[in-house]
Image (cartoon, one colour):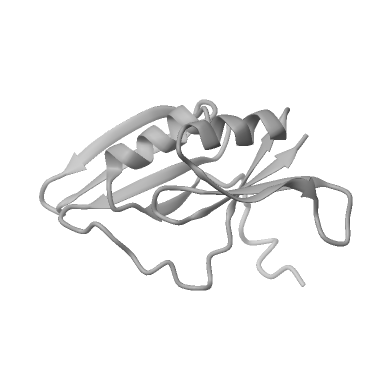
Length: 136
């Protein structure tokens, strides 16, 4: 059941935030390995954190990732509530090869998903977050 549909107009998802232990390392992973662009970055000295937004296009048209670095914190407990970030790719085998060559851990090799035919693979970002690649 959709609640509040009449009172709230949802336009689109803006971003997903993940906390990272090393901002430079995370930006390199998302930009160099996954081909995203660093869209903007800003330090917040009073709050002792830095935000970096990465994505595949302008924020006004698509969702992006917000990488949050809390100064002085290098590790987080990922918990069991978060699943993964999914990215569509045109050549899943080449994407995994490129990731592996960059030192990225491929945790599931390309192949059909269980109980389906969609070809997927999983990578792990430098902070342990799962990235699902989906063959488009």
